[in-house]
Image 1 (cartoon, one colour):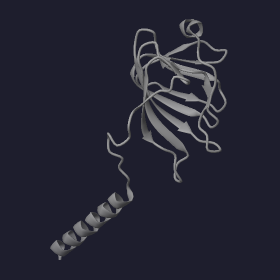
Image 2: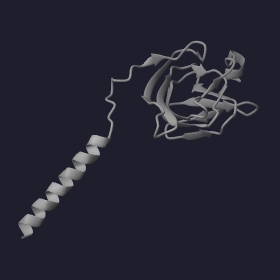
Image 3: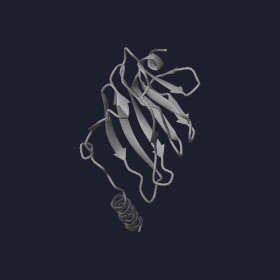
Length: 154
């Protein structure tokens, strides 16, 4: 009887694991091509590695963004906010009217909807972050003017 219960339990667990595995989607590394950050939205060398798109189950998209030293985004806002998770290097973030702030690996930055800001690497160090950007009305970003060298170095 114990053996029958053990076999039945093992089969049930295997079936549950298989059912769960069939409902998961794995997007293998290398299946999402890297892209150069467009010159109209970035200054310097930036690479964007898509992680996941928004879909019917989630209203956010995710990407790994890598900035070489001196590289940065243009000023922009997010209609539904954004989370940045710094993974490597040292960077800067700045919201309009505020001081430039240093960010390091492990830092998590929440930018509320509509806050004009920029982010990027410091002048001497590269920086990477995971960006989780929420969607509103089918849009996740509103790009604006580029950050000038004077603004960046201030």
